[in-house]
Amino acid sequence: MIAMKKILLLIVAAFFCISMNAADAFFYVNNKLEAKPGDVVPLNIAMKNAKDILGFQLWLTLPEGISVNKKLNEDEELDYDVDLTSRKKAKHQKLFEKTITGALQIISYPSDGQTPFRGTDGDLITANLKIDLSVKPGNYTLKLSNIAFCPDDMQEIEQADLEIPITIYQDYNITATSANETMGTVTGGGNYRNGTKATLTATPNEGYHFVKWSNDVTENPYTFAVDKDLALTATFDAKEYNLIYMVDGVEYKKVPVKFGSTITPEAFPTKVGYTFSGWGEIPATMPTSDVTVNGTFAINKYTFTFDTDGGSEVAGITQDYNSAITAPAAPTKTGYTFAGWVPAIPETVPAENMSFKAQWTINQYTLTFNADNGTENVEITQDYGTKFDTPADPTREGYTFAGWDMDIPETIPAENMSFTALWSVNSYKLVYILDGEVYAEYDVEYGSEITPENDPEKTGYNFDGWTEIPETMPAHDVEIYGSFSVVTAIRTILADEKAVDVYNLNGVLVKRNVEVDKLDKVLKKGVYIICGKKFVVK
Image 1 (cartoon, rainbow, N blue to C red):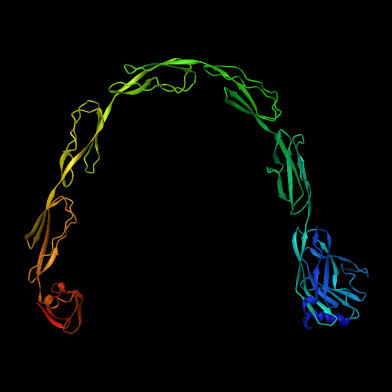
Image 2 (cartoon, helix red, strand yellow):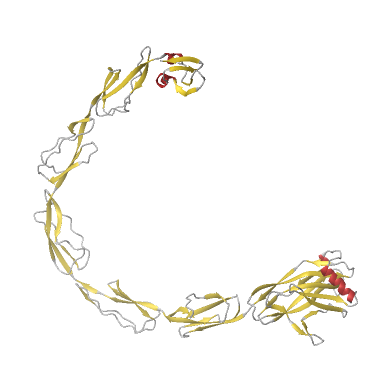
């Protein structure tokens, strides 16, 4: 027996044996672990083996609040509540050790060192686990680690760590009641496991409606996750239905009345120009539906007469009180515009006869003068036939006013009219002056595009160019100036060059990249080397 213990402990501590295929032996758990705080739940660990197994060892690691239950053994000593099943034989022993990590090490071995467990599959270990009352409901994980088997050929078999889920749950009581069962009933109460969904349904009786639960939730049916004992009461109230008073087919008033309430009829309405007939039948209490009550008025008729004050004739109107009035077509009167009736015609017939008199205004017309020069139009608005002042002649840069496009009348005509200014474009002098004398002269219309004069030529001289020339002809004469400059020896010799570097007689750079046309202006008097040639500037 001592030898077998040593073999198993050496397997755990040193793993000196040759590792074999884990399929030759392995543990598994064949029961679902579920428990409530305070429960003791069995953990059944089964072994499947292809070889005869003499012993094994494993570490059982438990989450906080879950421990291996303890009981009195045959020696009346408090020991771990872990047993081997009927697969063991009489010679099989068990040994428990607490590891430094807090895990429980479980070891089993045959006392004779050679007796294997029975069978090749089935439960081998039952460890009763105690769930502390402090453990909160939820999902937890147990762990079997450092698993090793000792077969009859003494070749160690290892198994990877095995994680085992355990669910800790709590049962809660959900109580659901109705505040008034004559108004409605409630279903869905009972015992529920924590985390599950409870659905409470409040069913109102006819004529009533659900209001809310005692926790102020108005959802119905009410579904929620259970996490504690809970008592809820459904509140109901009578439904409101509409008591609708109709007058002549039009809704007069709508009164909400709760089911079963006593109905007090509405006072008779009054309406100028009508006689009320009274309400139809009204029930004593409010039923479970809307109620419509009808009443009618007898309507009066009234007459409108029209005085056109010299205009065309307009016929009178006789209609029911409060009916929509279509105003008569406007009368006409030569030289005037109809300005309405006095008093104004109402939209509906009032509760009296009325007379109306036509109003007239003399017509006005507008003469519009468009100067076509970018300024605002001049408008003259006056009564028909009156005299008016013609606007002053307009002005426009670069143009001369040539009159209006139509003859202007002496008095305001019986229509609006528009007049547009006529213009003739002006011409101005474009003069080119070369070395103080007129070189060329042109008459150019205002706004016309200007094409610059070609550069003149003069033997022994360079043309220096024209002064600035506008793109188009302005509203005034323009003088453009040009000049010649004498061609120097430097320019003649270096005519093929555009820009050159200038050195003194010692080969020192004086000027860099100077345009040839500007050399005689840039260089002071002296002797220079340019393009390998010597030049004297005087």
